Length: 217
Image 1 (tube, rainbow, N blue to C red):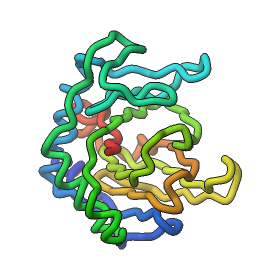
Image 2 (tube, rainbow, N blue to C red):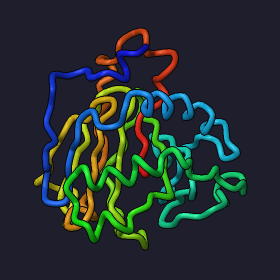
Image 3 (cartoon, rainbow, N blue to C red):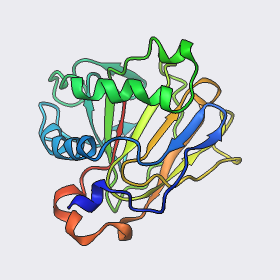
Image 4 (cartoon, rainbow, N blue to C red):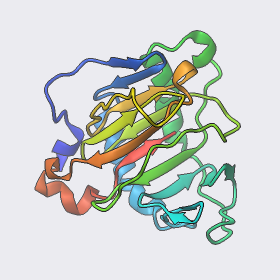
């Protein structure tokens, strides 16, 4: 199973997708990725279980378990009042330090890096039937930058513009262990995961890790 936590692609450099959005390959250490994948199975059991949210009457195909705060349509809460009323699990201390290092690693300025401390993580699972559309965070109160970590299969991460879901957009391919950090002028860009390349997953990873897809702090 160790191949999941080792580089799966030729050596790649960090790439600025648009101003404020940077894709960084192979950034977290393998032990951190392994820890996250293992913890996912525990987080998915609750107290608020993995679930697909309903937005405007439509049930989403991606399933999510939240840490720190629960993401409901258009708001974040400490209790999952739209599921079972339970309080969500706390944001793990072990995720704070790598989360804080990510803005510095992606070249964000001191004013952004200094006060940034992640405290909320929607952990998304994209299975073979997931077909999520793009979303924009314009309804959220916070404009803090977003740190996204992919674990599992390589995916297409569509990163668009701030005006509409239409082009222009860019489709980077985050692999297992890649960071994607965006803020500033890219904070309200439309984004989504139109496809997951399940065929790229080594067979030995299937049983243990097909449920771990992305952590976004």
